[in-house]
Image (cartoon, rainbow, N blue to C red; front, side):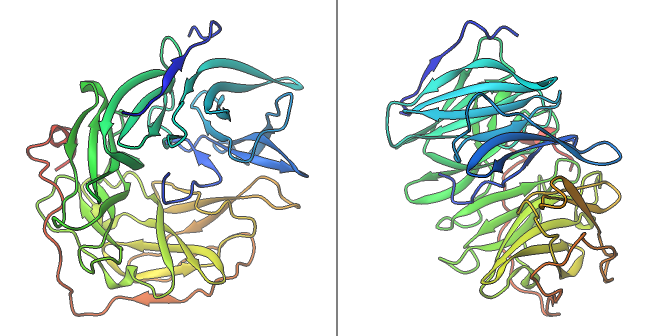
Length: 389
């Protein structure tokens, strides 16, 4: 079992293999938060993204933050912060108060076992609650760390070591995690309204590692990492939530000596998963840049990232504009806008500066490759009734 104990405060009334993005963004795209640097010191910073121009508000505490501190924006403009001190994870909400920073202490989670790793999950769709997982030797504890009535609340204990974290619906009820049991990793669904009930999500092959990278609740589009098509070598594929169609692993999402990580899916494309544009982070030997891809288009567009891109961060508008936050010395709070190319077309609009990547496109061959079996028995899982067929 994961050894963690709750430590509430009187003031509260009302190892993932993928590195965290340096900037967290609310599900509605209103706010973002990150740790910013002032010389050798770190401090939380909140970005407002829904106005005519983005702007940043520094939220420094009485002393600099540690580099490993996590921050997450809330829908009301406050910023959740997680600080670690001697295996004690303390949570607070930060907010601007004129020239200073206000802080509401929420409580703490103690993890006496030195092998237990606690981290925040991606921002919940509602923006009013925040969750964390404490990954122990044999199990994973799921915590509600903000938005509860009495400080951090232990919600569920899940057998196995869990990584990832993807929300599958707009209500923030269904959470997908990648669970390692018996040396294999499979994506599961945790139902937060049924006491943390667990059901399977991905099983492409019995001996494969199948992870969920990203999901869009509007269209049901899933971005999946699996080594089913080539054992021992994870590949990026796509499927549709609740569909009986198989997972596909396009050649256009397979680049030699480069890693592809999806970070944003175009929302609002109800019943049109193949029309959704996907933003991908591409990491190569000479840096990182941006990829744009859609299931209906057999081409991966590779675009230069803006200077100072908060790498791996961004969000789509419903009309197909990819917004990428960046920070430079000349412009400490900026958002570059990239217009998604039409099917078979060339990208329009660019970032605010040049990047190191070449804008070369990868075209998928005409011959289709074999596809794996369908990913999910969702017709039998609790999630089935919540998703668009």
